[in-house]
Length: 275
Ligand SMILES: C[S@@+](CC[C@H](N)C(=O)[O-])C[C@H]1O[C@@H](n2cnc3c(N)ncnc32)[C@H](O)[C@@H]1O
Image (cartoon, rainbow, N blue to C red; front, top):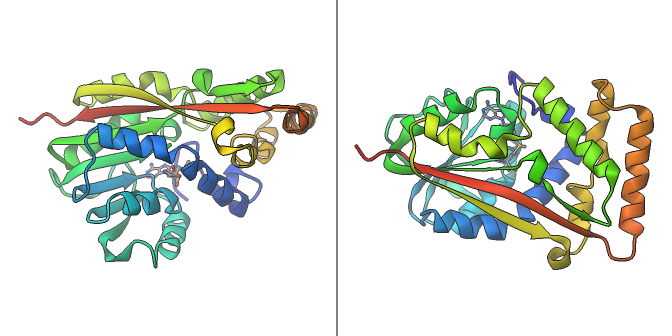
């Protein structure tokens, strides 16, 4: 893979299979709120939509269900992910899903062609977010919209009972992202990124998901996923002892009387100027 950012499925988790399972869970736990907010921002069935950093196709599947009459173009850098998505969506997307293997900063797509671009959990991984947003502005029709969905380490979520090891892990994860060219604190910069890339009519919303609504099972896969931190040990950012302590904290948390997880994601929207 040729990415210079902080995401590579071959390195991100203990195995690519474990990472695919985590991504699938992560694609579903907050989708209801994301879809609602996408529609609030102006996404409508029949629009021509691009999904950038589309990964293995789990979110593309959801877009296909939400938008049964839309043409959806996916842009994904990693050939492994493109292959996964093509296989996964074979009987789900039909011929209205187009697969483009390219970088978000150089999509190769035509100027002024699309109504809506969806960028979910990719901006935190790329070293040049303004260049990416500028490229997206190029391919949007005048008045077309970009929505970026992402997180911020300092707003990441809430764990009850509270746990110091979880806070330590989030901080170290941010350090790892930064070392690899990403930014796990991207949430606070989304507005400015859109502004610098020339978008207008900006908006910023937060969506939440929590275990009282969905139960703890999906949250035990994401975010309570200790295997993600093996990479940090390899990078020298976390010790074996810290990983063992984090692992024990996860077990204690899940075994506690009424554990609660709430995750917060930010959704930023901007429009390409009409003139
Ligand atoms: C965390 S995954 C998110 C996948 C999907 N959007 C989702 O929410 O499940 C990030 C994806 O962005 C892709 N990616 C990373 N850098 C990229 C780039 N420069 N251009 C296009 N895709 C990129 C990765 O290969 C990966 O599939």
